[in-house]
Length: 163
Image (cartoon, rainbow, N blue to C red):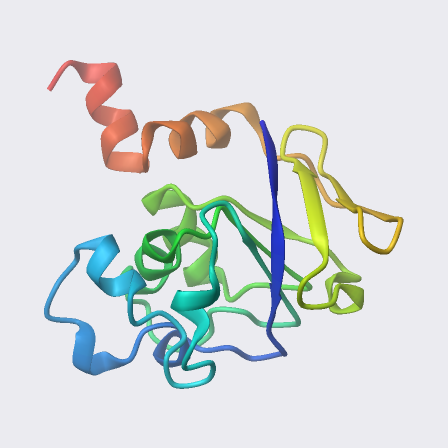
């Protein structure tokens, strides 16, 4: 699975309240959540995203509460993937469960906002086309790619059990 998009840069310790403020937790509609994604730290973020863009962040992305609304908001904003130096464990699980691919890239902090990126999820290769750099991550396992392609864990389970 190859993803291409423009990078939107965020620093370390972006918490789930930064991703989607608690006052918007009255819905689980990704499109509605996406309109308010990152509002408290980047007010124009949702308006600047083009479908398929990528978030590049520092350490501990998604720290804070365990709400699944955070990865839903990111997907709803049109982001295709999040790469970060590290993720909060619960955010990592919630992202996969909601069908949002994420990759840990130790040098993700070198990526600048606006850089054009190409991500090979299978091989774990991130090409920064703008800077002419290549970053490596562990490849996204096939079963996780199937979960993401299905739209999340529950949809994947339904597809396998005919429920």
